Length: 161
Image (tube, one colour):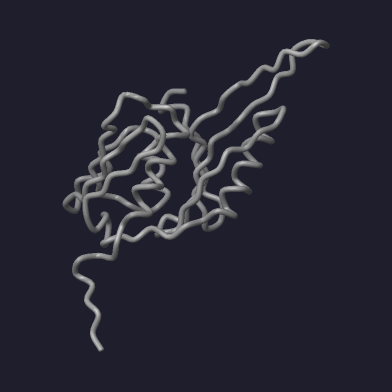
């Protein structure tokens, strides 16, 4: 699926993005059963973000199921204003990604999948790179979430008593 095909919808407080739709065919004795899976990312545009995969016999139903599951699995992302506090790597399966903080006004320098995740999380300035060859969408999303979960608080935050 090309980047142009990514669907974005702002529903209430959540930004919903459909990253990937896959058609699945199961061959049985009685014939072929056609189904769809939809990979969805949901975020509030501030710091909460979640992802999920929905499966159904129709595309619309698969997207709705994915959005419902993603809203149940929201996590908090630590940010430093419009970027991330420090450089971090994430790995899942054969995918390894690098996330680097960027100066204000740089924008999101990333591929379509990581871009969608960052935009849903409210990260506006970031540099990213997929370090290994595999670009399977679900593994890229999981590696991105792995990297974002490793983030510690902003360096300018200090604890005073």
